[in-house]
Image 1 (cartoon, rainbow, N blue to C red):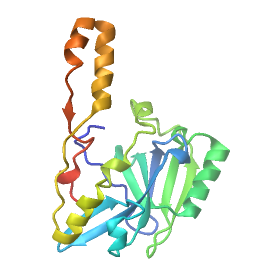
Image 2: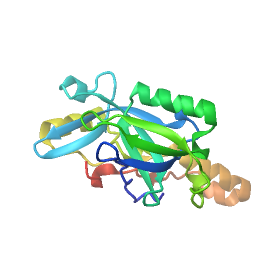
Image 3: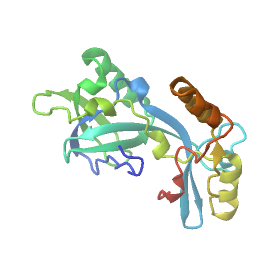
Image 4: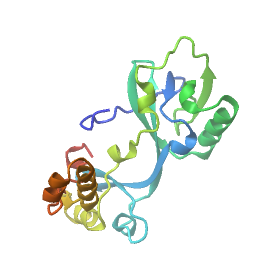
Length: 216
């Protein structure tokens, strides 16, 4: 998945809705879970990772929500999606049973059914895979990290600024010394003279992902 792609959300809109999917997870243990907050300031919302102790969102009374981010391939429209859902113990108990009985989740084809409308509950069942081949390069998608695309990971100062002003400060660039050293060591093995020239410099890079352009 390209870094510029915002994940498509997986949703079953009403009771009785179903979808046949394949999880991009080898195990339930590779499904990412995060504590996070939805913070509203005026008409603006931000979805931010809970910072734990001394979290300004917690201190200001914003509810902490435990979320799971399940990446899957939806055969309904042949699209990779992310299922952002609560960390419901009954749901994960069902996934645990399926994994124990049938093997790695990414090898299975699953039918998900929405069982209720009010507070949605879901059932998951294994279905025959013969009519649902894995998409091309599916193995490359298994166990890829996705939560960082769904939730802003910001400093306590940034979160507090947003709470107070409604504006999230832009992320600051930083010098990635480890990456610079890694590149220098690689160059040393290939060409000592080039490595010597590069060893005195550092590389300024942006944070892994600048989420300020995302719609939250």
